Amino acid sequence: MRAIEIINHQLHCGEREPPTPNAEQVLIKVHAAGVNRPDVMQRKGLYPPPPGASDIPGLEIAGVIETVGVNVTEFKPGDVVCALVTGGGYAEYCLANPRLCLPIPEHWSFVEAASIPETYFTVWSNVFNRAKLDAKQTLLVHGGSSGIGITAIQLAKAFGAQVFVTVGNELKQQACLALGADAAINYRSQDFVAEILKLTDNNGVNVILDMVGGDYCARNLTCLAIEGTLIQNCVAASC
Image (cartoon, rainbow, N blue to C red; front, side, top):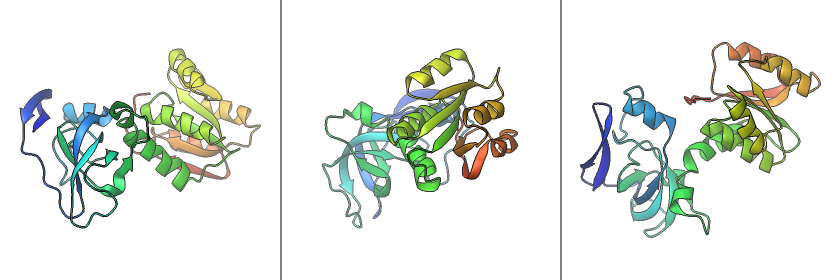
């Protein structure tokens, strides 16, 4: 199969043997792959693949299941899916855990579906499964213009929440507002703690999704509502 390899921090199209699924995996014929910041970091040598993962970049894919492991019952060959993977997405074939595969909605292209897993699985797991955000609650997202950020805006608004974000310039403010954010705070010229307290009548927000960490931790607690939830998401984001 053809695969994109990283050689001396450059991307090269090479030849590899197609991977073989174990009893708990599916093999997907890849039609489209998403591009994420970890892929860029891996090319720069700053994001080594986890133990056992492919050295081929690519963390989200869309395609057709070619074969399934003997213990896989959720999917069958021919199923059209998108998937979150540990690597190997920049190739004609890629292994995936069936628990991290999702049927592609009708009328969605492979390209559209390949943009779902990395950001939507992350936001759903953190903001909804863990933090239990629901309608009429408030969400603060740091890095609102990142992939995770724009996904969080759209999902939270779809479920009726009020969404505030922090960004680094006016252009990103306008982009986030256009996606539905209720307020976009420029952290370079504004104190996000003061702005959040002003926007919430000093009550704070119910959920904070933070991809920055560091000195943001204490500041987050200052603008977190009573019984609120702070989620530290370990994703490198350019925001």
